[in-house]
Image 1 (cartoon, rainbow, N blue to C red):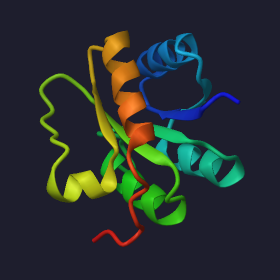
Image 2: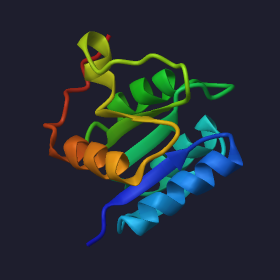
Image 3: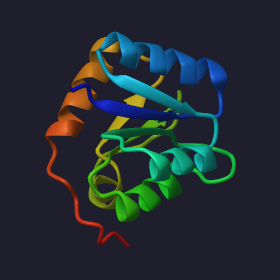
Image 4: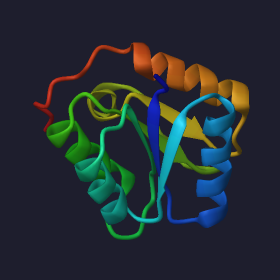
Amino acid sequence: MAVRALVIDDEKIVRERLAGMLLALGYEVAKAASARQGLWLLESESYDLALTDASLPELDGWIVARIVRVRWPGVRVLLVTGDGESVELTGESAKLIDGIIRRPFALNHIAATLDGALRRPVVSAGVG
């Protein structure tokens, strides 16, 4: 059974490009144009991965990550960042997210990051 991934990004071109790369890697992919739509999809269906833009307009990626971690602790959360955004997977961020995908996208980096995220142990919902 294929791994199910949800891509949450308000920029259509970014959302479509990332979804296309995930499809090429063999993932089943759903797409959401906003944090609220993404959370609704997570409520409605089962996903293994949620890839969320760090800088969504209403609820940013960090808020999405907190909600996912508490409500769906088995879903791995990856933060998608753009050029110039500095995010490290240490300390508190390591409790919220399972990986970082940086733009511009590189297929081999995405594949390795997703593989690493899926191998990480599930983090408990007790985040600050």
